[in-house]
Length: 282
Image 1 (cartoon, helix red, strand yellow):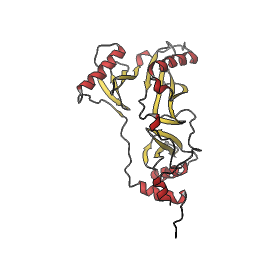
Image 2: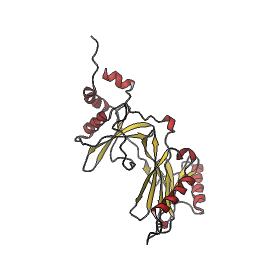
Image 3: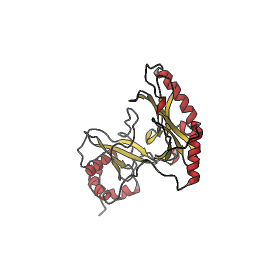
Image 4: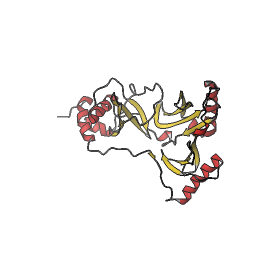
């Protein structure tokens, strides 16, 4: 007698316990006070790139690992740092908090955006520009305004990949800019999920003992794979990141990424089952 195809309601409990046998975790994306002494040539390349950008001769006093970039930090009361891509010593960002002023705001939102857009044109490589979309501005606690562009692949936001510029409204100085290192070329990114949103939601609830919430899961890209971001607890809040191809729980806790304002992609995204899922469901 031929086997009867099962629906997703049958599939969820079985698949959840199958996933428990798979080790899931995430390494830290930020490490403070790292040593570069294991590669003297690379260390010198990072130092020289940072010195050249700031036009200083002094040595950095500390290095941080920051999402595959190296932050070279200099000895100042307020932060002075440069983000360097260690693969080619190109500059991906800087911060000089001494440029943040106090006083009456002189520059309008429109003028500050023009300043931010000039930084976008100057510091973002051409291949990156076409994948970044402007998302707006917000005022930060220290009084500067942050302008952000998010990366998208086929309309789906890519986690932790964006360009930000902080502009001082008093003097119009750029206090900081930061470009994320794109982890995967667009052609290598898979954007179509194999796990439906409702299944990802149930996996998240079961894995973290959460209660059903009205919030819909959001579809994001985690490096080169689609991921469902599921809110499982309201008060904290707590999220589960569910791999949208195989259903693994990739992370839990905070959202692990900033979301574009008003981002809602996920609810009506079509699903294409993988061979693994088809074999389990039949």
